[in-house]
Image 1 (cartoon, rainbow, N blue to C red):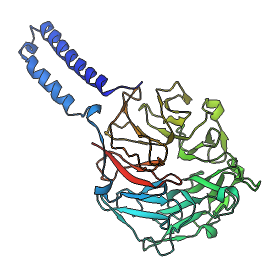
Image 2 (image 1 turned 120 degrees about the vertical axis):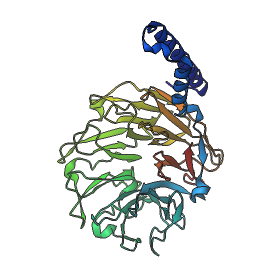
Image 3 (image 1 turned 180 degrees about the vertical axis):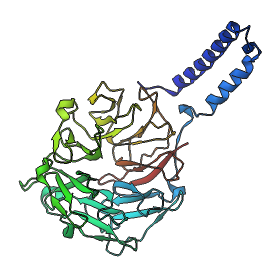
Image 4 (image 1 turned 90 degrees about the vertical axis):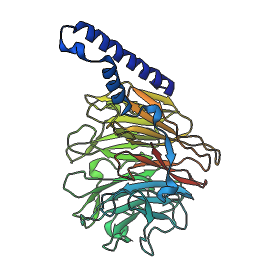
Length: 428
């Protein structure tokens, strides 16, 4: 169920009325006791003050702070990867500029503002680079970056990239040395995942299919060999041609092993990690083998296990997980041109809120949606925020750029042939 701002105000007024009535009845019932000395006015004032101390949903609004933060630009985009790459306690971001001369740019957070980093003379050149993932591949304390590359619509053999961070802070591509070029794959989303809990990050690569040359474009798992290389691992049961629009490594059943949520070309897949030895497809068993454009697990109801959020078929839905089962969606909202989504926390209530990118015609782009989670996922308020019609909606990622415990959202609007603004939306 969604709640309008007007409804939120009416609920607040009703709450104040209920407080007043309850205090009045309590005072009458307790006349013989010392409570009769308590002022109703004082109690109401305290109640009003307590409620006023917490901003109502209607008061939150999204502002574009990208210029102040030094992140604004106009570009062809694909993704934005957030991580503390320099271990200073602040979220930094790698901006993937699709097929642009500056193929990717790294922006260091210097305390609520971003500065572009010199990543090396041969780093991140112009190419059909798609999604990337941060991870410390060789366990030297420095974050490295793996990036997938497209395959010329399935007619070419292009290598993916593994950019190892050097002591200088620059990056060198070692994908060939580490055995993770995956030239046949039409690279899309990717993630690092410690499959067997040996302390070394393994790698899962999602690939679009089909190829035009008749060859297969399977998703692939690579197992880390002590930080020195990777080996292909088809024995885990993940090397399948399913696609990879979005991929998330997450322990959905809280057994201590990371599982894989994959939004494939035709439907959603959830691969359960069986003790670090193999993966099994439990999607149909759980009743969630549905079409998708994007999907993720997030803390929607606050009851422990992560809940499923799915964008597809003109709707965004949030489905609580109860006892390893997924029940009726607590959120089902119509969207237009749903392209991507992200979860983040804009009001410090420990529940995830949802940002939905809506894509429209180039330079007539549709407005995005920010859905504030209320009452454990049973209500969602749509928040007002700064919008743009320039470009075409593409991607969103959550980031706490100023370290205040509330997430902002990096929003990309340069989808494919469109050139659009890179924005940073903060809710205040």
